[in-house]
Image (tube, rainbow, N blue to C red):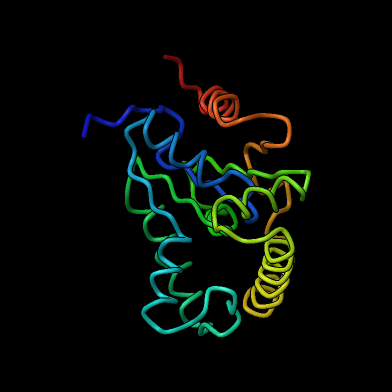
Length: 185
């Protein structure tokens, strides 16, 4: 792997977003462009769920302690390492008050596009994707509210950059993020 590109103001990046918003795509592209290590919280969670026999649709069945362990893992990585990108639903929320972290929130203002992305990614019908999206987000919000005593996970004031993928594709989204980070090729 090539040497990571140094961004003088930032030691790490978080990318957060709701399901099928484009956060994973942006994270991968940032990792490739900057030569930074990518840690995907969703992959960590899916690995945990598989290992413990938890259906992916049943997020509320996973132990609270796992969610807190994952949060602590993310916070420790952000504090102790450099040149990493952590992508997860709550990584930007977890990064609050940790200096040197650029927090990106990726959103898609059209839920039909998010549903279409899930249909194509997970080989579901449109109705299955709609139900999956609704159920997964509702269950997560309930669980997180219980764990963290807030519903403010995606408050725009918590983030340094908000990108709406309804109005921009992957290349444009990457360009916007790189400009905001102060990257000049």
